[in-house]
Length: 257
Image (tube, rainbow, N blue to C red; front, side, top):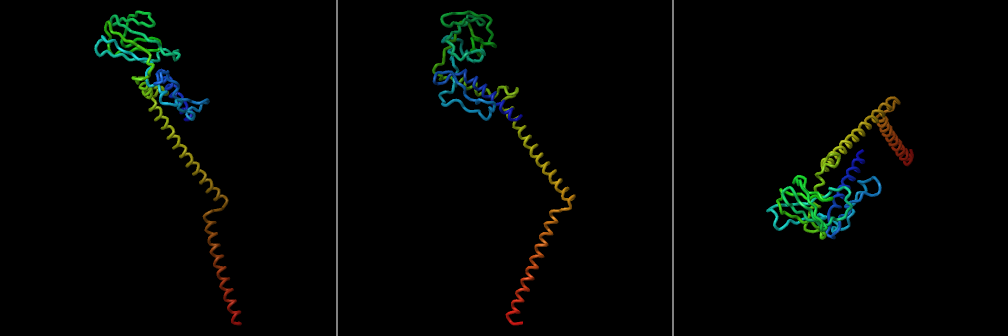
């Protein structure tokens, strides 16, 4: 189960990182490719590797950039986010211009065609395909914003910022990455302690069984070892006495007794 959880976490993390990376633009002017590879089988944690081969391939910038009109309301700021269209095919959107005709109405011009909209809500922003335009305050009439492709992939770190924020998303069994990791590490530690306790218990059972066996068979290894030492000492003493007797006998022969 622990290995399965680790594989699941790795798969979820890699998939989410790859999805977000694909929404950005690299300094090479191309949409981000997969950051990580999971291999061809389900051992995701073991096969988890970096797929990028160069830092130039990191899609740190957003694939689009937005510029406010020169006569816009003071301090009005707009940002772009992505992921509004699950069927987005990876093609960078064309340029478009947003022009507000009132605080709640605006038009979008793309490819020379202008479409009017009403009912603008700052909390919902403006969604165009896979792109969402967010505003930090309510726009006024005549405020304009021009959105173009970020072909150079520089001057913008919005996508790498989003990638760094993935760790705060509750996508790992409704937990953040850090919380999920700590929880699983705790399980591993508990499992390790239980395994150690189990091994100690089995050793105790084995020792008790051997003691019981020795009692039944009438053999005590400690006593047998002590007897063996005593016999060895007696043998050595006897051998010494025989050697001494032999030496005395030889001396008697030499003096002719």
